Image 1 (cartoon, rainbow, N blue to C red):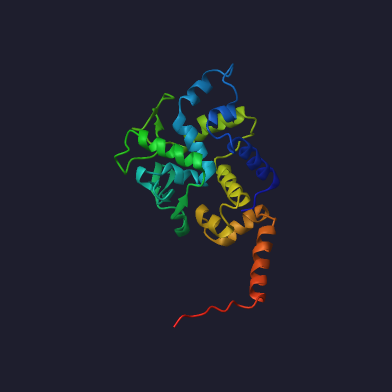
Image 2 (image 1 turned 45 degrees about the horizontal axis):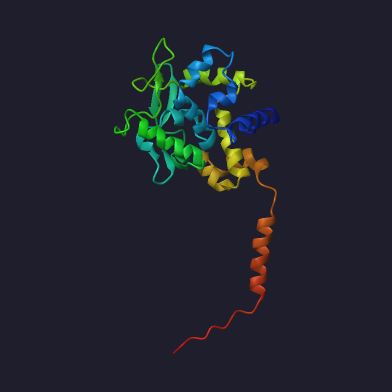
Length: 248
């Protein structure tokens, strides 16, 4: 789908909070803790959710894909995560299944050094790090704000009681977690870390055409490096080839 200007502006606002100041989501979107009250104290005590938000903004995974990640899906040796499952909500509760399309089954690089470092620390401190099938994120204990790895992560509850209130305190009017996905795509293209084809694979879009339609306006417009490479190639081809003597 196309991103309208208002939505794109909100992506830019989210980028303001994520670029260069992503060490602590609570501090970024809530400001100083002075006078904010118990909500900030609760969020500050949830560093795993701070990491989860940065994870969404710096990898581009869908919330259902983030929620379904297991210990085994993070490969720090290759610097990537393996998207093999998706969590969806049905009338009977949450269901784990295959990603939404064949192209959504993919390996996604961890491009940000800070995120790579923090994910490594997080995995080493994970209470179930030796269980490769364990869920990556903790859930909330029913009736409490306490997080526990013995409970399943609840994406809807996370959005309603953690992400949305924090964003509201930052002056962002109801952004959805999915907008972090657009943040990643914008950053990846603007930084030239990924080209459009690579981004399409990383995002798990059903086709390249979808990626190009949504993000064509983000494609870098400075072609000076391309021009230099093309000109050098033309000049090299115009020169006579060097004659190399072959010893007999």
